[in-house]
Length: 556
Image (tube, rainbow, N blue to C red):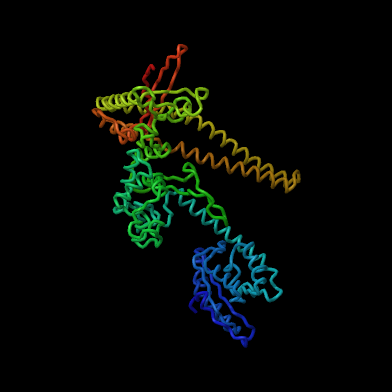
């Protein structure tokens, strides 16, 4: 029997024996596919219709939710059926078994024990022998609990499967990230999409030049570049439309959301990595929030990159310290780069009120809270500009004269900085591993004490739970720490890239945002004031990849 709309119910004559207006409800989730043909929607429907025919009941509607978990009580056809019940169009509901109605024992129990009786509906779960017209339904609450336990078990297995794939660096998303496509030979592997990859490179190019998501969004609209939703629809992967396309079917395809561009710029997939486990999921509730990037599972080198790692890291730094327009609505050349060496806040640009106005940078904390919280760290724009330009040219010429020596210097500097951190982490991990061994022995002693009757089973369970919780936390910490230590830091390769990058700038005469964003990670300004109130400013330039402080004293 074909599914019927709510307005297509047939009126049953009063002479019909029993007066039942039956509704057949069928449900199939993705997990049920594993159970074979017997669980299919068609088989459920045929079996229930034949049963109703044998009983002399006329089926006035068939409802079916295909691909929905039983934990979801907002299924479309289930809700349609409940609305029909409230309109008194149905007074009998029949399902293959109780789990087809639902696996959430609280909400399913509410339907059977409250909603159905209150609306004069008889409910039958055929294979479970449940019939609310009879007094033999004491088993129903227990079946509801068992159904939910089954779903919880399946949920754990599915999560474990995805976790294992994430740790192996396999892609598990429904749609490939924009700029990639799924490998026809291996759905867990990504290949570059030659049609959309240039768009991704264009977006990163804008970001490398110091532009934020809003600027990029406007440029994509001006260049009439369709958004990812349009591409997916054109390829038959999705049927959805953005809010812009609904408002303006002709031009809406060129409207990109801020969040789409920001998420794209933050996704390490474009460096050849697979980042998984980004969302915080809870059983029955679903996704409750987004995890921090440092909590993602990231496996490098899984497919061909669209963006090199150096460029990606530069973009991440830019996103963390977004540039904001000043009073003239122009973005300062050093915005997002220049920091206070004492409080760590940005130095903001402003104009002096002197007879000959000039641009100066000063500490954001000082400007907001005064000298009791930080000092001014004042530096003229022209002084900063000339200093940075000179240092870039000096480093570039040094790299051209003896690139190997400069690369060795960079490598040695980085190794010295990281050696102490690695040693401290190694000591901490060793302590944690020793503690895990102690906890293992404690568990064995606890078990022996319980067997010998020295402690009660209740105390054993309490102490065991506490011990195992600590063990789990320590093992996770050690596993993550060992992974970080085992990841090779390609210092020599990074140094070589840095030398090659800066050699191009030996003869530059002007600075622009693209140059600064490519070469410089951070500019730190320190201030020291003598007893005679003389101000001394020192500037550190930290180049991208690894920091090389270049310090020059400027007396104010």
